[in-house]
Amino acid sequence: MNFIPKKGDLVYLPSNITLIDCPVAKEFIRLEEPRMAVILEPNWNGETIYHRVHLGGSSWLARTIDTLEVVSSA
Image 1 (cartoon, one colour):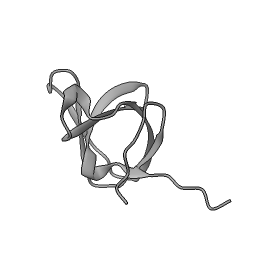
Image 2 (cartoon, rainbow, N blue to C red):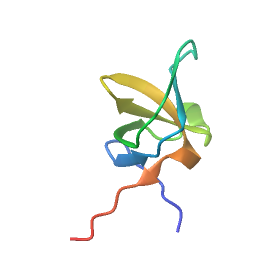
Image 3 (tube, rainbow, N blue to C red):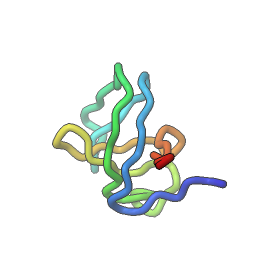
């Protein structure tokens, strides 16, 4: 089953991925450690390539294949 995130969902971002700023890709960050982020806009700009996420006080674009669902086992 594919993960289809909604606004406000918590996602896991693995290490060694690159996030770009939005809406214009002037800056980027490379995650050295896994992080958690909040989905601000799934399928950003109507495309399935990026999700807009909130991380570290800023808005970033993360590739959809790099955003993993956070599941509780409780």
